[in-house]
Image (cartoon, rainbow, N blue to C red; front, side, top):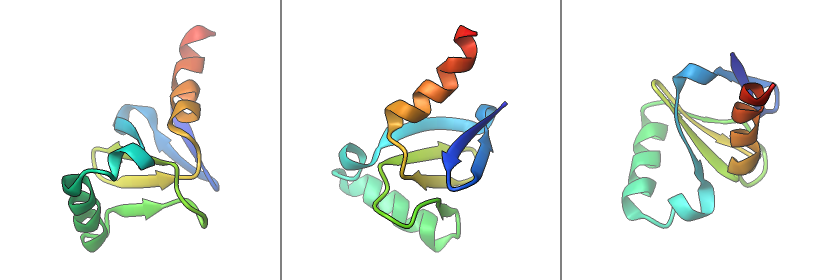
Length: 82
């Protein structure tokens, strides 16, 4: 299954390692360093033109989305309820 991150970007659900709130995660110096390194390596993919609300960590890349982490998590669990 795939999950839509916004702006026509979809990723495979099984590749997701974690979904994090941008405001809370970027407080840590280590997280900011991790994001800077991902950007330098070309592994940071931004799906937004405005300020991102969430960070989605996958096996290969790091995505930034304008969707709230709660919305993304809801999209993952929605399928399990049906």
